[in-house]
Length: 196
Image (cartoon, rainbow, N blue to C red; front, top):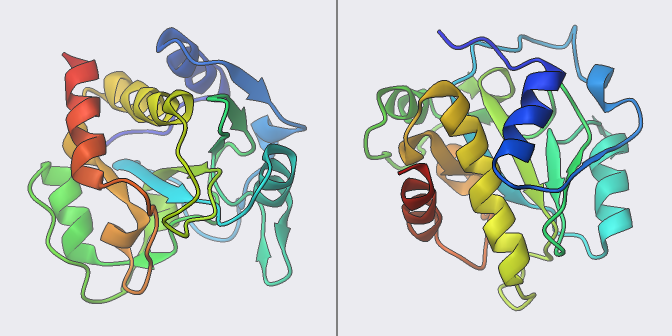
């Protein structure tokens, strides 16, 4: 059972992995406490924002929108490779997903396809939203891809997890397509290399 990182531990883990961290507003106490559990944590979910522009992407992930209050993740990774911290604790990012996928993440086994949305992922996963339109055309700059690898590796390193604890939203929840523009196999391989 892995307890969530404290805000200080989270910042330290990210910076120790060589990332530029931007602390946004009251992120240390900004969460969805009281709307479900937070922890034990079991992995990292990677998303794309479907938005354009760093400032707008960070703001919507901090505030949320009508029908889905923020924070919408823990960190927003912008195209320049910076990680903007917008939440600490439960965040509205993973939503309901497949219990079999969660079991595979915990066991660090190959993921089955998600077939049903029956388990609260916001309890179990850190979430990184990555600034990208998600249309398959919007580019992923090298600095951003490197930051995604480093951010996922930072959490995994803290807990002693392998790359198998890093999943895409589309691997967790039926009907999701994110992240689009790179494969999760590609990302996990780079996380694996970084953790060596």
